[in-house]
Picture 1 (cartoon, rainbow, N blue to C red):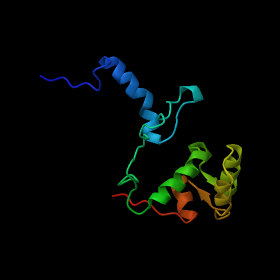
Picture 2: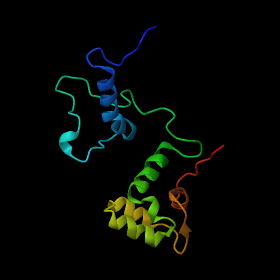
Picture 3: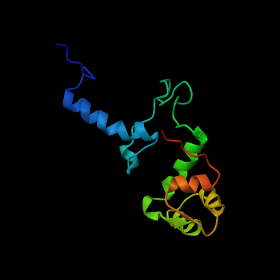
Length: 137
């Protein structure tokens, strides 16, 4: 029986610990540490850059019915509109985003939401703002 390990310099427990430390960053594509000192150090001069998609964009990163730009735009809205903000009207969602220190681009986008309509979730809001609709099987 062959036992496969991630490294020959560490034991299996240390390998799992190191894997856990970078898991959030690999999934989100950005730092997930609250303290800057806990972030991994960047590549040294002369070393190749570390990137999730070193040869371009990730393939297959969006569902049917929406584009990669839709995914990015909807995610940016969701970063500033927590699930607790819903259901809400365009005005209440904009106020919530303002409280969470959303950038002007997000606030401007929310200013274009139809007035008097209540949105149950980020998906409904995104479609009302002109974004694509995710088609699920």
